Amino acid sequence: MRLPILAIIHQMEIAVIHIVTPENAAQYSEAMEQAYRLRHQVFVEEKRWTDLARPDGREIDTFDDDHALHMLALHEGRVVGYQRMLPTTRPYLLTAVLPDLCEVEPPCSPRVWEWTRYAVDRNHRDRGRILSPVGSALLTGIVEWGLESGVEAIVIEMNPLWLLRLVQLHFRVTPLGLPQPISGEDTVAVSAAFDHRTLKRLRETRGDAASVLTARPAARRRLAS
Amino acid sequence: MLPRLVDLTYDLFRSFDRAPTAEALNACLLQAVARLGVESTFAGVIPMPGTPRVRQAAHVLIDSTPRGWTEHYFKAGHLERDPTIRRLTTDPTPFLWSEIEPLYRRDPAATRVMNEASSFRLRQGFTVPLVTLDGRVAGFSFGAERLDLSPELRGMLQLVAAYAFGRSVLLSEGPVRSPVELTPREREALQWAAAGKSEWEIGEMMAISEHGAEKHLRSVHRKLGAASRAHAVAEAMRRGLIT
Image (cartoon, rainbow over all chains, first blue to last red; front, side):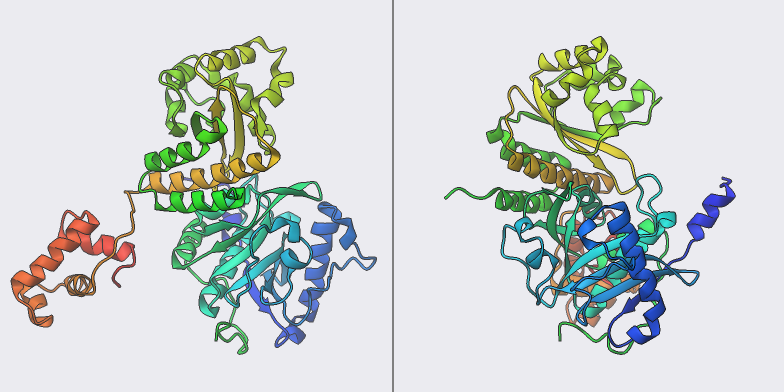
């Protein structure tokens, strides 16, 4: 079967996920600048979460502290995707900003982290409704990082449309509340547990069994220890 | 105190996880939503426009609508006229069928679909639009004679529909995958079998008789539904029971 050349290039698109923590932040100062601007573009300019707007075009909030773990999807030296992981052992978005979404005891464990600020550059976004290569690389990054760090589940505040995707990817989803409109968009809080099957599924979906993570800084010790 | 909807949703998710087949899952779902007045469920991927009528029915994943309805629906070509289909391919938010009545009031063909549905105890309903992992639009409908849903119940049905759909897709993808547990001895015997050892050799290695080794392996075959030694080894590896 012959594929149009553009489709072939798209399939070969490789995004590598870099994990940024205080230990290696100095090396990533320029990339983090790009990441904050990508966040501003996606959340303020596109999604119209106007209370996050900042005159310098960098979307940074109080959770971008030393406890946050940033994941950057880099493609040809540019940040094309981003997500932020927050520990649930401290105040996090769900408990501090969106407590109404959570009707049960909120997760609080070194094995559970919150997934926030998922953002993919407009030019690398889902084609139609399909999860884009950058999007699935970011998600795979979470699972790879989690499996080797002792993290078992992520808390997500998301559009309910994501639920089916998560189930199909072998996440074991637990509802933390029922959907509610947040800034005009239906949002539900869930916790989604994963294991090696999830990783296998993601790799099948991506058609690539290689790790998406770059070599890690030494400080990425087991979180559970 | 009444159980909260979020807890009911949680319980349903976990019972879906345990359901061995899509039919069992749907039975469990129907039982749970019966108290809301829901009588039937219908779900599937929306066929691409132009899909021949005879092939449209193959897109159905879950169907507990009254006998005769689905067959009539596809045979009559209702798919193209069904206003719920039109609505869910253009707007991803869930809806009660009564809410879209203004959209098809002036369309006699669409009105006919809804009227005919009424005669199959599908007078009222709630449809949840879905998008599958591979980007296809799907829908999950709850049918009833009468359906009143609070915003909270709508939210619950939205979650339950997505979860039920996802589990049903997984169950329909491969052979039934109920969790299999091997005893440590069975696993050991199978691990040796995977290394190409004969029953006699396995017996030696495990310090049991050849007959004992055979017994362990037979039990493994039964648990995995395997037709041969090679099949058992392959299946056990696929499930991660041996390495």
